[in-house]
Structures are given as C-alpha cells and as structure tokens.
Amino acid sequence: MGRYYAAVDIGATKTTVSVSSRSGILARVYQLTRKVGDRGTVPRQIDFLIGYTCEQAQIDRSQIAAVGISTALSLVMPENWIADWKKRKPWQQAPDTTVLEPDIA
Image 1: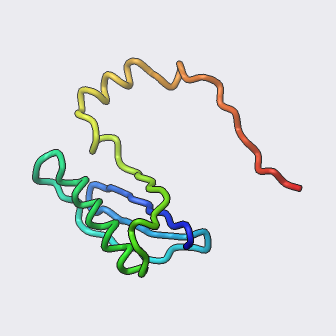
Image 2 (image 1 turned 180 degrees about the horizontal axis):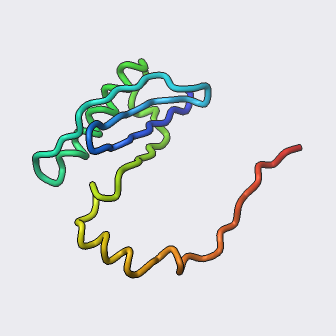
C-alpha cells in the first residue's frame, strides 16, 4: 500500500482537490466554492471532493496519509479580525526560524 496525499485549495471562485503520491498527481477535481450555507458547508464540500478525487485516482480514501489545505485568509476570518491582526503585527514577534537542509550524502 502506497502513501497518498490530498491537497486542497479553497479559493473565492473554486475549490480544487488533488490526490498525489510521491511519483506525482494521480487525480485533480474542482468545484465552485460553496458560498451559502452553515459553518459546515465548505468542510462538507471538501470531504466530498476528497472522496470523489480518491475514486478518480482509484484509491481508497483511508490510504490518504495527510491533507494540506490552502485558503485565502478572508475566507476563514471576519474582516475585523484581519484588521486587528495587522495592528498587532504578530510576524514581528515570531521566533527565529531554523531552516533544515536535506541530508545529502
């Protein structure tokens, strides 16, 4: 059994899901992003799209080892939170970053 990964991109226009393995993308589907509904509308859409993409890739969704999600900040936070975040400038309080180089032998 191989390791598979799902990549989710939630855009203002469409939501795209790709399923891949280390060798590349096996299947990719998209659907217009749901803009009307309750708080669970987009998560249900993502769940459906992951399942459908797995079917297209001919793998069982239980074989998905990890899911990465990318989205526009304005889709997940109310506008006043964005303004507050910009005022606080949390990026200036972030600790130093350590970059890990690949182990090359």
